[in-house]
Amino acid sequence: MAILKKIKESIIDEKYDWKHKRSSSWPKVRKAFLENNPFSAFCGGKESLEVHHIKPFHFDPSLELDSDNLIVLCESKKYGVNCHLFFGHLGNYKKENKNIKEDIEFWKEKFKK
Image (cartoon, rainbow, N blue to C red; front, side, top):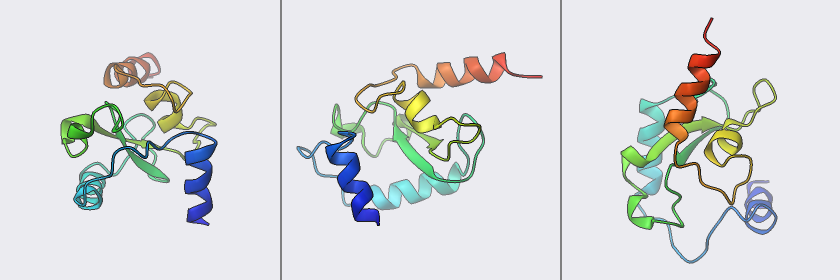
């Protein structure tokens, strides 16, 4: 099933850029980042977590392993929102949200009780 997801993401969602290969260190960096950041930065969800590159990997591969360029977002659709898609990509995987940290803080503050 995982292979079908990757095919869909690459062909339909155009999520992958095949020009740049991931570093062999990426799985370890991703795992460590998730261990240190076990919740979605926006909704606090713990399911379907993605380590999102603030500056997308295909735009700047040199930032792939830089923890300052990473943020955890979920794809669990908690409350009907896919945080990774909505905040990380502004609703379109082809887009980049350069202000993601500020946007998350803005919306979290707006909905504080």
